[in-house]
Image 1 (cartoon, helix red, strand yellow):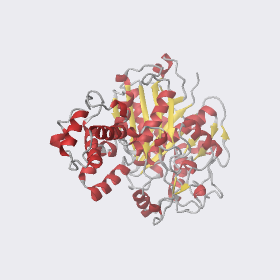
Image 2 (cartoon, rainbow over the protein chains, first blue to last red; image 1 turned 90 degrees about the vertical axis):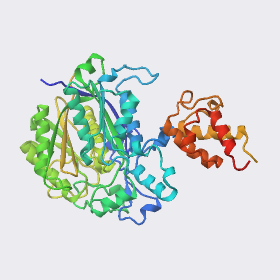
Image 3 (spheres, rainbow over the protein chains, first blue to last red; image 1 turned 180 degrees about the vertical axis):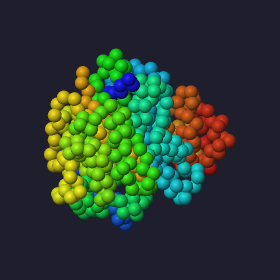
Image 4 (cartoon, each protein chain N blue to C red; image 1 turned 45 degrees about the vertical axis):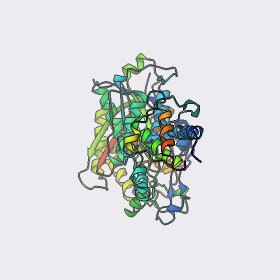
Length: 417
Length: 84
């Protein structure tokens, strides 16, 4: 019997709110975080919409900290502070449970890393010379920077890791964290991911792939997973962090337990660099069930990857049917990306938080903006209004798939005391 | 007009507040950057660049490593101040 891992703290800063509570209430209210990009630099781009963070880090962090952290690291630090306090751990002079730092890990991912730092400093180099390039540029742009900063902030000395699997990165971070605890390397892991990639280069690059919605005149309705007229994803930014903890450790300190991080499933498609394969996605889901000791009939809810791309959404629906068989028709499926946009390396963690809260509160946030359901989407999509979940034992899956053919499914279970 | 000690001290206080979050009142001539103000070597690089902008005095790396205290910087800037 492997070690049971539970979730004892949640933190997020997203396009819907500066913390978990405000994000969750916006998800239940069905509010879109997508906005028109007012900046002049967006004018010549095919994509002029995005889902920017709701609360700017400059409202939260002091100036001298902001200047030596990339924007993605600022998000992660803010989310990690919320999660750490939420778990009841001591910080600085504040009261709380004092952790054994050798038993605390940090696994914080980003899909791209500090790309805004990279690009801004390249501009500075060209315009003003090397002396004006920030001496902090390297730790700001490196993709493991957020993991390192968070390990320093909270004294996490069991190990700091940054797994990279594009849009599956922060789901994989949660998986890695579960494995750290199961392997006995840590009692507590600060796990999640972050992304700050709303920059004209990224909009141009994803735009060049024809992967993004160009519904520029109607931002609220641009992210519309499963709708017939969907035309691509909307780029969001933000971070989600969870505190994973061995159930034994959590119980011993009397911690509040949000839910059970029951297992994780991975697969690699080995097919195409950008287009994920339904067989590979299905394997990740089946492996997550096996890892968590769950049957398809235990699953009441799936927070889907559902990015609002024409091919991706229906591929995942096919994969859910492949993986779960007849039980698939009984599952309440949603894509919260209809509201948050796609947070790339932040998405898996933010959506795992939504999944944990859906189980705990027995409420599934809706997928918004479905006017006419795609004919190929023949499963139970939660639309327009939140859906009540039944009480009793229940489990849910959170799917995240990334360029590179990475498929990651996190299995979460309702906690019964 | 050469920069006075007070002008340089005030300017340094502003720079150090911006870069390291230290209260300007803490920045007094006798303070050591590393031991008293908790400023690391990378921040010293930023401070040197900002000081160049503010005072018009370049601080090469060979000189920067010798500037241990706030007073050291004041003396250096005054010694190189071209407006003197």
